[in-house]
Each structure stands twice: as structure tokens, then as C-alpha cells.
Image (cartoon, rainbow, N blue to C red; front, side, top):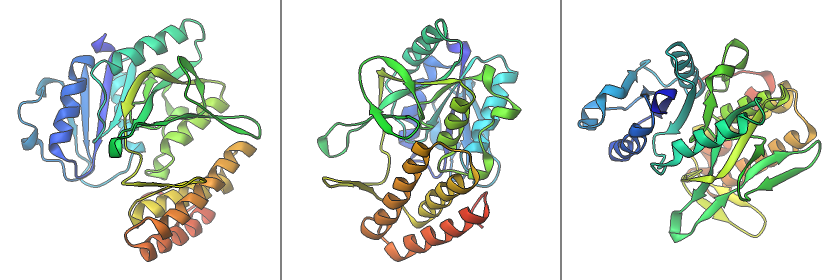
Length: 296
């Protein structure tokens, strides 16, 4: 039921036409849409959308991902919503996706009440190709990927398209504000799984999603393209988890591989490789000493 679900769209210098399309796609499936303005949102350019459902929150600065998620979770829990679903500003979910996610999560909860979150199968449709992003599963040592049919437990979800049961959200299960952006979603899922909750992925809902500005693929590795500030957060938060968090061997191997991909992508893919490498090195140093929060 739409009254059960609150959505949040986290905005930073958005393309307003794409944002309008996202609002139109989800409006009939939710009871409230939080537009969280991290900067650059012009509400006047959204004239004609379902204004009755929109709650605008503008902190006056970019506060990252975790703080908006915590705001929406708290607002939703206090106002009687059962589920929160979060989106990036350029997400393009099919209109039926939210109802499918809710149905699959509720059905799984009837068998296992520890299920607390679900996410769709992500598909990158750039360059005329459909590239499926498989779900990740961690064993004690090994890492496996799953993209089969149905709804199954997985180890992590990305923020965009993730539906969370608000009954589990609270002081001990908040998103980590200090991470600011990268690994906010991974960190929350990893903590929930350590507490023996269940995080689900489903192929019954699919969502087009671009994981970076550009992807360069070879036989051995996929390199992505970002700006230097994202390289800082990617490297810092990877190192922070390795040094300061309680992780399995498989998760540590996953992070080490991520660090290699970030560094190689900085050199090979980014428009300003020298700046990106500097961002990586500074992020590495800050992660070691636990200097967190927004970039200062």
C-alpha cells in the first residue's frame, strides 16, 4: 500500500528533467517523497509534479548520503511508514518496481522475520548493451556473485532502489554519517548481516542504473571514471574499513580489490589523473588515522 512507503531522493546539482521523471515514476507507489537538497535543487523547475506528497529538506550544504537517509528514516518511522525506499537523483525505476520490492520483502518476512531490506537487480544499459550487475555474497573467505532468478539473501545493496523495513532502524542501526558518501550502503548492510538480519536481492525487479560516469572493460578488470573528490572518499572509506572495522577475510579481500580498481581507474580512466591520484593518496592517509566526515 502506498501509505506504507516513504521515498527519499538525494539531490546534488540534479538534471531537473530526469528528476521530474523519477518523481513521476514513483509518485503513485509511495505516500511521501523526501527531496533532500545537498545543493543545486531548483524546486521551481519541478512545477507540475505531485507537490502534495513532497517534503523538501535543505540543510544549506552538502551533507553526503548517510545524513539524508537517517533523516528520512526518522521522519518515516515517526509518521507511521513501514518502509523507506531510497533513490539517487538520476535513477530510472520502472513504475511497478516499488510494489514488486514490497511484495517480495513481505513474502520473505512471512518465512523469516529477520529480513530487513531488499534491492532490485541493477542493469547498465549504456552503449546499447545490457550489463547486469550481479549481487555479492561473502563467505568466510570466498566471494561469490549471484544473478539468478528469484529473491535470495545477499551481502550488500547499493543505496539507489534499496527498500528498508523501518522497524529495524534506530540508534544502533543508523547509517554512518562519518562515511559521508562511499560505502555508506555497504557499511549498513554489513553491520545488519553481522547482527544476523537478512538483506535480500531480487531479479523480479530490475532497475537501469549507471554505476559511474564511464566504464572501461578488459578481460581481467572493469575500470570506472570519476572526479578526484570521489576518489578521495572511495580510497579513504576503503582504508577506514580495513583498519577500523570488524570484517571477514572475504570483505577485506573485496576492499583490497576495490582499492586497486580505484587507483588504476584514477590513472587510466579519469580526466585529471594527477588530481585523482592525489585524492587517493590523501584518502589513504585520512583513512589510516580515521579522519572522517566531509572533505575539508
